[in-house]
Length: 313
Image (cartoon, rainbow, N blue to C red; front, side, top):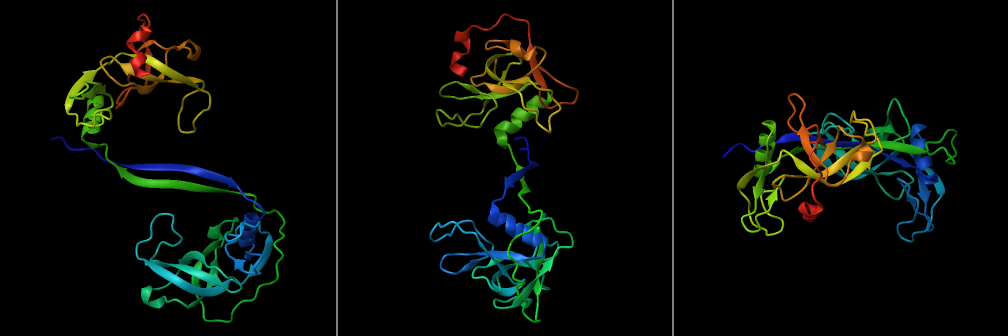
């Protein structure tokens, strides 16, 4: 049996959001080395602050400064920090109730080892050298045996407040396409397209899935399809993707390869975007050393009759 492929895969995008008055004041305060909470109707001070009371759903806006010192309420040791975490050396994740607050803030504690951490230990904020108005303006917490700090009485009013944030969302994982799609990918490297036929309904799935989603039975019989096919449906793309060097507008289509029982998708080229149509006969265009077709272009054949592909829409 051939080796099943696997490869590292990264999904990454910037997440942009605007801030309301409460979160804006909190993050702006961190930039200025001020920690703000919000007072609820029953007098509790929540840190980090929220815009609505979690118990009553009442809108909150009474900002209260708390101290940069506090107490560890609970903790967990992290022996192997990962990319993007606050510290690069082993540290403790801690919940810290800052002096003047009634709830705890989650962050990292820089400690020499798990034996040095315990619930009830006093800590203080270690501020980042450069602060931009983000939770990372708190570099971490550190053990502290000195005098408890006192709030300065800040009102939560700032010049040049932070009004929005951009957070990089990223997921790293190892992807394995499995037996069926490994054979499909290996065939593409030889400029062939291979699907698998269901032993029950006889439909040929491209790309193969290893099982028929209709009949629920395993598939193993390989069938070469194409290379030509028929456009079944399509859309015109008018928004340029940052990671694609393709000028808009362009057409992305579902293409039923000859002999396949399922349409796959691909870009249509070699024809003005407004001349692409259902039934258009196309063929793959490969670039040098490519492992899959760059796009599909018209073959010059007459358009396919609708009845030949209507079941593949």
